[in-house]
Length: 232
Image (cartoon, rainbow, N blue to C red; front, top):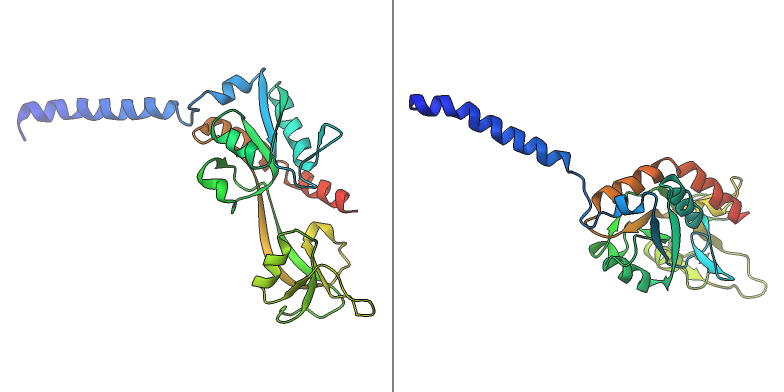
């Protein structure tokens, strides 16, 4: 190593470290400045209708996640612009940054995860089968599920037979549903699936994503209790 290189090496190293630290000051950031725009401004929210998480009734957004979204906006001093776009169209609008947030019972397993950014799960709970039977597996056993609900597929994966109605005179089968929907005194026969609920934001809006995650992290107990109240 030459004498000159020995002298300039510390300078080069210092410049690299300084540049790296300067870059870190800007991380996380938003590609489109969503967080800065929302503060004291407007947050555009879309809904994927799924009770009890979010739905529209008489033109008014309702649901557990709608209430959380209102609290989120209030914390930033922002007004909410609810979008008339709903369902998968809301997620498509989010993908193209026409919305800032989408709520509605989304899960971290949703295929839209490749197009939008999901928060870390703010609430996790099991899907269970309850009934007057000892705990065990579901192999070959009938399990009552709600029409058009994902529980049917999960019951089949667990070896059970999903049914949406029972014939007159037959004993009631086991019933499948989220744990929050049943009273604590119900006998849990089997755990069927685990669900993780998330909110969705546009990809690349990292500061906004972290802000939403931070807010939701402190609302788990509140969300659980709201779901229990809805079930009752």
